[in-house]
Amino acid sequence: NTKLLLHFNGTDGFNTNNTWDATGQHKFNFSGDAHINTSESKFGGSSLSLDGTGDYISVPYSSDFNWSQNFTIDFWVYLSANTASDDHMFIHATSDDNYFYVRPVTQSGNNWKLNWRLRTNAVSNWEILTTNQVITEEQWTHLTITRSGTAITTYVNGVAPAGGSATESGTVSEIAGVFEIGSVSATTFTTEFDGNIDEFRISNGIAKWTANFTPPTREYNQTYSNLTLQV
Image (cartoon, rainbow, N blue to C red):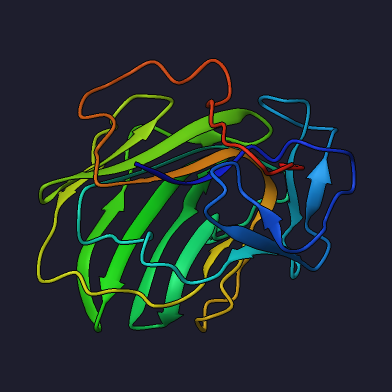
Protein backbone atom coordinates (compact mmCIF):
# COMPACT_ATOMS: atom_id res chain seq x y z
CA ASN A 1 0.00 0.00 0.00
CA THR A 2 2.96 2.37 0.33
CA LYS A 3 3.17 4.37 -2.89
CA LEU A 4 5.71 7.03 -1.95
CA LEU A 5 8.30 7.01 0.84
CA LEU A 6 10.89 9.73 1.26
CA HIS A 7 13.37 9.27 4.11
CA PHE A 8 15.38 12.35 3.08
CA ASN A 9 18.53 10.63 4.28
CA GLY A 10 21.86 11.58 2.76
CA THR A 11 24.82 13.89 2.65
CA ASP A 12 24.48 17.59 3.44
CA GLY A 13 23.56 19.58 0.33
CA PHE A 14 22.41 16.62 -1.78
CA ASN A 15 19.99 17.81 -4.50
CA THR A 16 20.39 15.46 -7.46
CA ASN A 17 17.35 15.19 -9.74
CA ASN A 18 15.76 11.91 -10.85
CA THR A 19 16.37 10.37 -7.44
CA TRP A 20 14.34 7.28 -6.54
CA ASP A 21 12.09 7.27 -3.50
CA ALA A 22 12.52 4.44 -1.00
CA THR A 23 9.82 2.28 -2.64
CA GLY A 24 11.53 2.35 -6.04
CA GLN A 25 8.22 3.39 -7.64
CA HIS A 26 8.79 7.12 -8.15
CA LYS A 27 11.58 9.52 -9.00
CA PHE A 28 11.59 13.10 -7.76
CA ASN A 29 13.34 16.37 -8.56
CA PHE A 30 14.72 19.25 -6.49
CA SER A 31 13.95 22.88 -7.42
CA GLY A 32 15.46 26.14 -6.18
CA ASP A 33 17.72 25.59 -3.19
CA ALA A 34 15.81 22.56 -1.89
CA HIS A 35 18.31 20.05 -0.56
CA ILE A 36 19.11 17.42 2.03
CA ASN A 37 20.31 19.11 5.22
CA THR A 38 21.99 17.54 8.23
CA SER A 39 21.36 20.37 10.70
CA GLU A 40 17.79 19.21 11.43
CA SER A 41 16.29 15.73 11.31
CA LYS A 42 13.77 13.49 12.99
CA PHE A 43 15.33 10.24 11.82
CA GLY A 44 18.40 9.30 9.84
CA GLY A 45 20.50 12.39 10.58
CA SER A 46 19.08 14.61 7.80
CA SER A 47 15.87 16.01 6.32
CA LEU A 48 14.55 18.05 3.40
CA SER A 49 15.35 21.75 3.84
CA LEU A 50 13.15 24.41 2.19
CA ASP A 51 13.52 28.19 2.56
CA GLY A 52 10.13 29.36 1.28
CA THR A 53 11.52 31.03 -1.84
CA GLY A 54 11.27 28.76 -4.86
CA ASP A 55 12.36 25.64 -2.96
CA TYR A 56 10.41 22.43 -3.43
CA ILE A 57 10.57 18.86 -4.64
CA SER A 58 8.27 17.46 -7.29
CA VAL A 59 7.06 13.97 -8.10
CA PRO A 60 5.62 13.50 -11.62
CA TYR A 61 1.95 12.67 -12.02
CA SER A 62 0.95 9.13 -11.12
CA SER A 63 -2.36 7.38 -10.62
CA ASP A 64 -0.85 6.17 -7.33
CA PHE A 65 -1.87 9.56 -5.91
CA ASN A 66 -5.59 8.83 -5.88
CA TRP A 67 -7.71 10.59 -3.29
CA SER A 68 -11.03 8.99 -4.33
CA GLN A 69 -10.26 5.87 -2.27
CA ASN A 70 -8.95 5.21 1.22
CA PHE A 71 -5.52 6.71 1.79
CA THR A 72 -3.04 7.88 4.41
CA ILE A 73 -0.47 10.66 4.19
CA ASP A 74 1.88 11.08 7.10
CA PHE A 75 5.13 12.95 7.65
CA TRP A 76 7.23 14.89 10.16
CA VAL A 77 7.42 18.67 9.84
CA TYR A 78 9.65 21.31 11.44
CA LEU A 79 8.32 24.86 11.11
CA SER A 80 11.01 27.52 11.02
CA ALA A 81 10.75 30.79 12.94
CA ASN A 82 10.06 32.38 9.52
CA THR A 83 6.89 30.36 8.93
CA ALA A 84 4.10 32.48 7.45
CA SER A 85 0.37 31.92 7.14
CA ASP A 86 -0.58 29.70 4.20
CA ASP A 87 2.94 28.27 3.68
CA HIS A 88 2.01 25.11 1.75
CA MET A 89 3.71 22.00 3.12
CA PHE A 90 2.51 19.97 0.15
CA ILE A 91 0.15 20.44 -2.76
CA HIS A 92 -1.18 18.18 -5.49
CA ALA A 93 -2.77 20.42 -8.08
CA THR A 94 -3.48 21.29 -11.69
CA SER A 95 -5.26 24.62 -11.12
CA ASP A 96 -7.22 26.68 -8.59
CA ASP A 97 -10.14 24.30 -9.24
CA ASN A 98 -8.22 21.08 -8.58
CA TYR A 99 -5.95 20.81 -5.57
CA PHE A 100 -5.18 19.04 -2.31
CA TYR A 101 -3.02 20.80 0.26
CA VAL A 102 -2.08 21.35 3.90
CA ARG A 103 -0.86 24.67 5.27
CA PRO A 104 -0.46 26.47 8.61
CA VAL A 105 -2.95 29.25 9.35
CA THR A 106 -3.98 31.39 12.33
CA GLN A 107 -0.79 32.06 14.29
CA SER A 108 -0.71 32.64 18.04
CA GLY A 109 2.82 33.33 19.20
CA ASN A 110 4.89 30.50 17.74
CA ASN A 111 1.90 28.14 17.47
CA TRP A 112 -0.11 27.44 14.34
CA LYS A 113 -3.40 25.81 13.43
CA LEU A 114 -3.66 23.72 10.26
CA ASN A 115 -5.83 23.95 7.18
CA TRP A 116 -6.32 20.88 4.95
CA ARG A 117 -8.44 21.06 1.80
CA LEU A 118 -9.40 18.93 -1.20
CA ARG A 119 -11.13 20.60 -4.15
CA THR A 120 -11.76 18.90 -7.51
CA ASN A 121 -13.68 20.11 -10.57
CA ALA A 122 -14.27 23.45 -8.78
CA VAL A 123 -16.15 21.69 -5.95
CA SER A 124 -14.88 21.64 -2.38
CA ASN A 125 -14.94 17.96 -1.43
CA TRP A 126 -13.88 18.72 2.14
CA GLU A 127 -12.00 21.23 4.26
CA ILE A 128 -10.58 20.90 7.77
CA LEU A 129 -9.35 23.59 10.16
CA THR A 130 -7.91 22.26 13.40
CA THR A 131 -9.08 24.25 16.41
CA ASN A 132 -7.52 22.95 19.63
CA GLN A 133 -4.38 21.12 18.52
CA VAL A 134 -1.57 23.36 17.29
CA ILE A 135 1.90 22.82 15.90
CA THR A 136 4.81 24.80 17.29
CA GLU A 137 7.68 26.40 15.44
CA GLU A 138 11.12 24.83 15.76
CA GLN A 139 9.77 21.50 17.01
CA TRP A 140 9.28 18.26 15.08
CA THR A 141 5.58 17.41 14.72
CA HIS A 142 4.01 14.30 13.19
CA LEU A 143 1.09 15.08 10.85
CA THR A 144 -1.34 12.56 9.39
CA ILE A 145 -4.45 12.64 7.25
CA THR A 146 -6.54 9.57 6.47
CA ARG A 147 -9.60 8.72 4.43
CA SER A 148 -11.77 5.80 5.53
CA GLY A 149 -14.87 5.59 3.38
CA THR A 150 -16.17 9.16 3.35
CA ALA A 151 -14.62 10.03 6.72
CA ILE A 152 -11.55 12.29 6.57
CA THR A 153 -9.52 12.54 9.79
CA THR A 154 -6.36 14.45 10.65
CA TYR A 155 -3.96 13.75 13.50
CA VAL A 156 -1.33 15.93 15.16
CA ASN A 157 1.26 13.81 16.97
CA GLY A 158 -1.21 10.95 16.80
CA VAL A 159 -4.16 12.86 18.27
CA ALA A 160 -7.28 13.75 16.29
CA PRO A 161 -7.99 17.37 17.30
CA ALA A 162 -11.36 19.07 17.63
CA GLY A 163 -12.35 20.22 14.17
CA GLY A 164 -9.90 17.71 12.72
CA SER A 165 -12.38 15.62 10.76
CA ALA A 166 -14.81 16.03 7.88
CA THR A 167 -17.21 14.03 5.74
CA GLU A 168 -16.53 13.98 2.05
CA SER A 169 -19.09 15.53 -0.27
CA GLY A 170 -19.48 15.32 -4.01
CA THR A 171 -17.38 13.17 -6.32
CA VAL A 172 -13.61 13.28 -5.95
CA SER A 173 -12.10 13.57 -9.40
CA GLU A 174 -8.56 12.70 -10.43
CA ILE A 175 -5.92 15.40 -10.04
CA ALA A 176 -3.67 14.67 -13.03
CA GLY A 177 -0.85 16.91 -11.87
CA VAL A 178 2.56 16.92 -10.24
CA PHE A 179 2.76 16.25 -6.50
CA GLU A 180 4.93 18.87 -4.80
CA ILE A 181 6.36 19.29 -1.33
CA GLY A 182 6.91 22.93 -0.43
CA SER A 183 5.46 24.61 -3.52
CA VAL A 184 2.26 25.99 -5.07
CA SER A 185 3.40 26.18 -8.69
CA ALA A 186 0.24 24.85 -10.40
CA THR A 187 -2.03 27.42 -8.73
CA THR A 188 -2.27 31.16 -8.13
CA PHE A 189 -1.40 30.61 -4.44
CA THR A 190 1.83 32.38 -3.59
CA THR A 191 3.19 31.12 -0.25
CA GLU A 192 5.74 28.32 -0.17
CA PHE A 193 6.99 26.38 2.82
CA ASP A 194 9.87 27.49 5.05
CA GLY A 195 11.14 24.65 7.24
CA ASN A 196 12.07 20.98 7.13
CA ILE A 197 10.25 17.79 6.18
CA ASP A 198 11.22 14.25 7.13
CA GLU A 199 9.89 10.72 6.58
CA PHE A 200 7.13 11.62 4.09
CA ARG A 201 4.84 8.70 3.15
CA ILE A 202 1.76 8.23 0.96
CA SER A 203 -0.22 5.00 1.30
CA ASN A 204 -3.14 4.26 -0.99
CA GLY A 205 -6.07 1.91 -0.46
CA ILE A 206 -5.77 1.99 3.32
CA ALA A 207 -6.50 4.25 6.29
CA LYS A 208 -3.57 3.20 8.46
CA TRP A 209 -5.07 4.81 11.57
CA THR A 210 -8.73 5.27 12.50
CA ALA A 211 -8.17 6.24 16.15
CA ASN A 212 -5.54 8.08 18.17
CA PHE A 213 -2.11 6.44 18.00
CA THR A 214 1.51 6.75 19.09
CA PRO A 215 3.61 8.34 16.31
CA PRO A 216 6.41 6.21 14.87
CA THR A 217 9.66 6.16 16.79
CA ARG A 218 11.90 5.27 13.84
CA GLU A 219 11.86 5.58 10.08
CA TYR A 220 9.73 3.21 8.05
CA ASN A 221 11.33 0.11 6.56
CA GLN A 222 11.15 -0.31 2.81
CA THR A 223 13.57 -2.54 0.92
CA TYR A 224 13.89 -3.81 -2.62
CA SER A 225 16.67 -5.12 -4.81
CA ASN A 226 18.87 -3.68 -7.56
CA LEU A 227 18.59 0.00 -6.63
CA THR A 228 21.00 2.16 -4.69
CA LEU A 229 19.39 5.19 -3.04
CA GLN A 230 20.45 8.49 -1.55
CA VAL A 231 17.13 9.08 0.19
